[in-house]
Length: 279
Figure 1 (cartoon, rainbow, N blue to C red):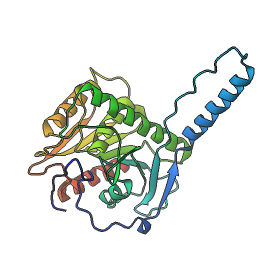
Figure 2 (figure 1 turned 90 degrees about the horizontal axis):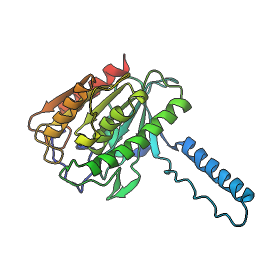
Figure 3 (figure 1 turned 180 degrees about the horizontal axis):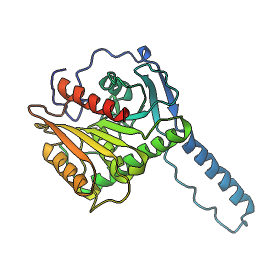
């Protein structure tokens, strides 16, 4: 897989991919039903309130509920384990979960691989949030990353309740997906056991302000040292802030690699995922 820098108009999974046939993988498309149930509950509450209110009263504004995330699910390594560990892999700007699945196809440990789809249409795929390319880490971006991370964490929590899952889930992803992986580790440390961000970083406003209390997930990050879109210095700052907050956090840098995933980076990242699933 030769290293290649991805522009802001191309899918961001960073890998040079062979022809990918969705039908060749044992996957299902699903939606997180707990959000749908919440929407129906809000609707029912609205009807009840309307029936009881006097004619002079204006109806209360309807609650705003984000639509559920679409995702695909794969029985990785073909284990058929009914309580296999959960890995959630998040794609980057303009990419699709079907493409990102190729990046994680060689996870050797049996697991349930879930790949959510970004909610915003972008080019031939989708996006998780608006972002300037190259990376401009301001507070507004931090807020958009946080919103996306909250939605992914809600999906993770739903899957933990809806599936028989062994251990705590692992979240990973490339570029936007790497940023979300970092943010889930910071904002929802109780929801996961580990994060493996690739080519991601967080704005200072989204980083822990000091030592964090409670259990914290392990963070194993990977990044091209010559990344022109999300420069390595921001990944270093992210890891330094997490370490200062008490996280077991590390960053592996790859010289000569831009905003992409080299063969060696992919091999080592998948080995890190396998090792964590075996804990």
